[in-house]
Image 1 (tube, rainbow, N blue to C red):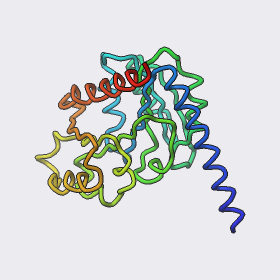
Image 2: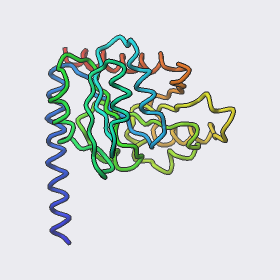
Image 3: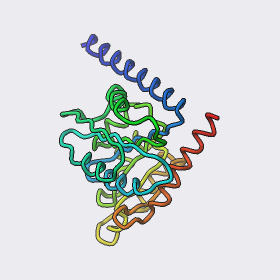
Length: 220
């Protein structure tokens, strides 16, 4: 058993080294990489589709999913470069997978969005070389998720609450949700979005654009 633990630790350390290498490479290029993490059905793909409609930066997408290319097909329809990673049972993406995906994307982009595998637990534990983790939750999931899955919310630079157009129709405790986010990570940016109706999208795009400008100013 101790040997198994040592092997797992070694594999994770090797992957973190790949992540640091990817981050250095993207820093040199001035490319921002965001890791979108949320449960299945939280609205990650719909948020991405809406984000890719004429943003003020060049985008590319890495789609992570257990099986199928359905999300890939939706992103392809926007005309943005996209690469699919199927984990075939794996519950998260790892840096070695991102490294291979980046080799298949054009270098002349400004922002790379990673849609991680639908899961609020495992994806938060792995560093992919991203600049920011973004927690995605929908009102349909209920307002109790931040305290139930604190690791993601501790790390997230932003929390995006999606499907806010459903507020009149589902029992969502907004006070509990944002209050718990504040307890876990008062510095995280907070956005409320309805990707279907376009509500809040401009603020989300402004946030991403601000992160990109800040990164390039730090590197100049």
